[in-house]
Image: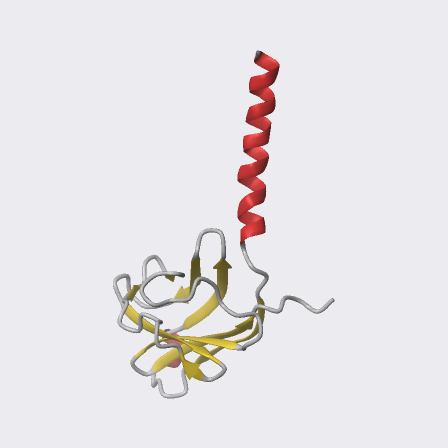
Amino acid sequence: MKGTLVRIAVILLLVTLIIPTLSCRPVRTTAVWTDTSSLTNAPFEEMAAKGVTVAALYKYIRFHGTASFPDGTVLLSQLYEDQKPLPWWPVDQSIVVKNGTWEIKVPLGAHGAPRDLLSGPFYHFIVYRPLIKAGLGFDLVGPPQ
């Protein structure tokens, strides 16, 4: 009985470690940028988009990054597919800066969003507030073989 419980525990541990890895679609980040050209105090205000996760099993897309703004600063965002804004993206969803970081996690398959993103198009994410924006370009093709 004890041996069976140990085997079950090991299997559960492996499933817990492997399934999240398998559920994330490969994302190739092609461009990361920040535009502070319109800021007068650009060296003191910084923001960057750092990464994207498209999780098919957990049905969400998540973007995250950093910002030097005070806690509670509200950012907005937009996601584009081949230079066209996606109508299902929640442009009015506030992204709140906390401890120098920000994150937005949007469910797929709900509120008009597709169940998954397409593998062919180029996607472009922008996070912004007045006078500053940062972006991240990506596709779901994966790294070159």
